Amino acid sequence: MRQSLGFFLLLTLCNLCTQPASAQQNHEWSEVAPGVHAVLQPGAQRFDDSNSVVLIGDEDVLVVDAQASADQVRALLAKLREMTNNPVRALVNTHWHGDHTQGNSLYVEAFGEQLEIVAHTSVLEDIPGRAKPALDEQIDTWQEAIEAAEERLKAGVDEEGAPMNKEEKKDLERRLERSRKRVDDWRQQRWALPTRTFGDRLLLQQGSRTIELLHLPGHTRGDVVLFLPAEKVLVTGDLLDDLPYGGHGYPRQWIRSLRRLRELDFDTIIPGHGAVRRGREHLDLVLAMFESIVGQVDAAIENGDDLETTKQKVNLETFRQQLAGDDASATSAFESFIPATIERAYLEAKGELPD
Ligand SMILES: [Zn+2]
Image 1: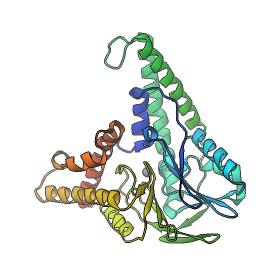
Image 2: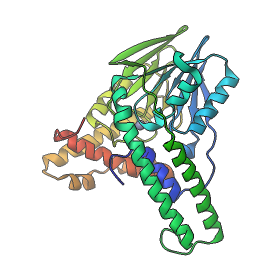
Image 3: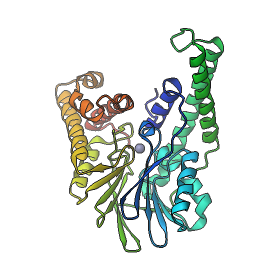
Image 4: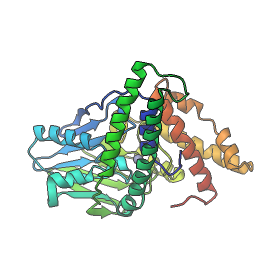
């Protein structure tokens, strides 16, 4: 797998190869404070696309993260229309990754000129410079995987070359159909850029609700966290989610940002992927894992180890057990996300990490 690709590809590509051909499920909505709705991807889909957060005010609506799947965005907007006639006036992108920004244009379509897309300044550059090329690469990779699967279907054999039975063939056909539709959707992708950007901090007011936007990089260079001081809610994007994807991350900066989160007076975390969390336990666990990674990498460098040796030496077994446990998709996420973080921590220590 090419290193530059995000988790979105890593896991959705796995779907074509290994996951059962179940249809996409609806969001799970939960109101964590009055007017503050977490719109979560169902558990099995939690690494495929991002969560959103909907803040309903007296006159308008603010949404955090656009998601990638056009069908899911349309479903979210249909449900929102049942709840309120107030228009969405602000859409915040917590960072540039496609599963948080690809749906932007659907919001522009629905709410027009009056919609502001809010993000850190770097996102303006990173949607065309990083998200778009990543999606183009993803389309090529998926197209190749689809063609390979079509060949296998024709020959009637699975990936190991063993003959498929009727049920397996049907399942592969269903997955192929869904994958072709996804690639078609991606080919029609239209990008919409932020219209309001900021540097360190931005304060928004929605009626009586105060919303503080903080630039806290780590997962990417442009991560934004939303803090609702009265509701004691944090919306963390992928700076703190179920399992941190480190492929575009800055581990030492990530640690500093997670430490900043600890100083905020919150009770509830709505992450970019995974379930709503109460309290600080998950934050402390993820922070401890990053500290452990950086500590072990520094010790390996001190010892003169090269990158490969370092990757093999770093032991995160206790964190794997606590973060992934027996959950198959979490385990596969852990195994694809964490080596990238170790590599980035190594390059960062050597001063070789690209911006
Ligand atoms: Zn992300």
